[in-house]
Length: 344
Image (cartoon, rainbow, N blue to C red):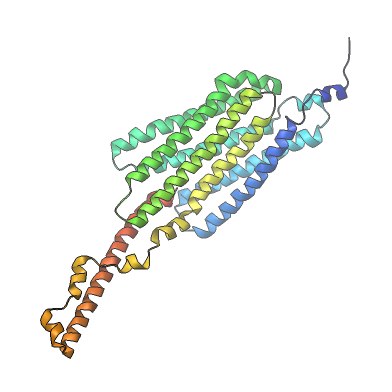
């Protein structure tokens, strides 16, 4: 019976497409974790008056993200240091590797549910709330269910060369429901935000920016999820799909934190006004500047004082009108901030 040395077995393992891919994914993930930590710090520093549930969600997302990178580092150390050169260890999955996928799943579902709740409150009618949010929540829960199934089957299979067996009935539906959930959330946000546009330019500017943010967030996570599915289908025996999965959880966490931390810039953008638009006066107010013929022709000081008085009154009327418009705009922006910019 022929025997094979450990060197021959190691030569049969493609380190570049297996643990080399995992190492690259780990480095990118570590960088993104630094961004997550920075954004978490900035959130608690600049938004101390946020609702307690929002603060708790931020803390939970950061804790899960920290747990994920800890599990990832443990798995990489296990394969690249402790058991490097052991073919038996390098061909099977360790608990920390598969658990990290479950933690990433929890982060993604928490973020998706968060935006689903925001969509619920953006809907103006009770019927619309349930019609829009129930399908989205169903997709998110389906995504969670397929994700749990994928992780459980990975624990059962354990061997990397057996993972392609779960492609069609677990891994692929898991990724597709993730993409569909993100697309539905982004579509719902864009449609509802566009419906909240009003007559004020500043409010519409904020709404347009929020729509762009929602589209970008959806595109980023959806594209990465689609790439993960394609890689897993084309090269199931490599670990590139795991390297991509390392990163996708950080994208969800950072998109969530970025939406919260962008409120200051959105608020400033919404309150920007041009000087000319601030002092513009309506035709009825401009007509107040036109003095009566007798007053102008007389050339007396009283006539001049009368014109000056009317100019002053017209200026005050314009100022009051502008301030009323500002207050209305601020109310509308504030309304958007309570529902959208505060939590989006």
